[in-house]
Length: 524
Ligand code: MN
Image (cartoon, rainbow, N blue to C red):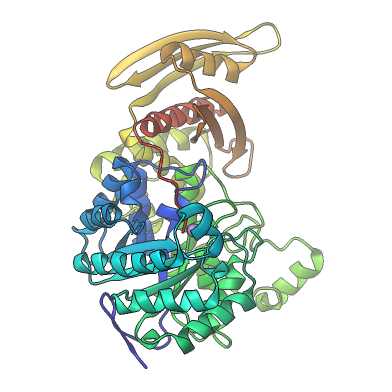
């Protein structure tokens, strides 16, 4: 039977709803917090990718979370914008207020239903939980036509009780029913059994969308999601690069490409433009400072690299011998050598459009073009990756309080290194000079002298964006303050300048983080 959905109308039988929770479950994981500008930029990219629902945050958790959900609801068009809420009325009203400006908004409310969670986390009797389900969904429906209800720790919930909770949620007006494997414990057959049971036993089940939300603690998140699809689930919750609590969530790119590669076994369609997958994955990595591992499916550097002679021979004769999907279908392209110092502004603008930066304003474009010219002077061949690093750097740093101005460093084998640094803080130029054990240490000491702070450096790493000795360095700096960790990234052909930029980026993020309250304890 066809489902009439409040946000999507009549749902075609093969249509799968992609629910992206990169900005909520993903952002909740240590080191992945983002500021408002970063969240908006990522939300736009996820909308362009073609996600159907964006879970933008957890509005009650902090004023910052509320503001970002509200801002995404105001500006991002296309997907349904969703806010998360526990079952308390205050949570639901706050979520309702945050999503109100959205074209189409959704309230997602949840409560734990497993014996372990009810007894120790909620300290509630099952009957009280059941009443809370009815009350919370009823209240949410008074504020939104599109309401999702989740049974937290659903995969470890006693089957009869799960059926009663789902029945109560549907009766109160929930339009999507999500059964999360919150702790990443389930096997594929467990999820197949749970969803089959709910669809067979619960009255009204044929009129709602069932949804899966799987965690990757045992590396089974995507396999579990596929099993859920086979049991009739119509919505999958996932994140870019599989980021999320602990070992992360099911990866959007892996689910989408599984559906696209195996229509014989999984006859479903999504609205995702797969060619934008790599671009979106890279943007998230740039914003958070965490690259995916080289062997990561779909978006890892080695995902389409064929190293062994036998494989290469086969590939040359016919690519299908060892390739189940093309690199181009997820956004990798072969000819990514782009431009040099003679390339003009129009060519640069065209290139940015092709790379997905169509929305770049005049000021950002001018700044990016100036930095491109400087780079092209120093580096013979400028690749797509170079331009993406540079533009992301420029766009993302646009609202930073502390900005890099200049740096000179003297170092070598004859004595302590010396750094002379200039930075701009809230419009004022600050200078400092410092010595150190090597050029990076001297530079970081100069930053601490110009802008005194207590944060501790806990990680420093350097990588190259492309190949060759003139490649741009990409550095990551992790700072810790009061148990909070942030990662900053910087890129430049000069490794020490890249290091200074990364350190300042981390400092900027730390200042944003100080303004945020600790998020309330939650999961889902
Ligand atoms: Mn989760």
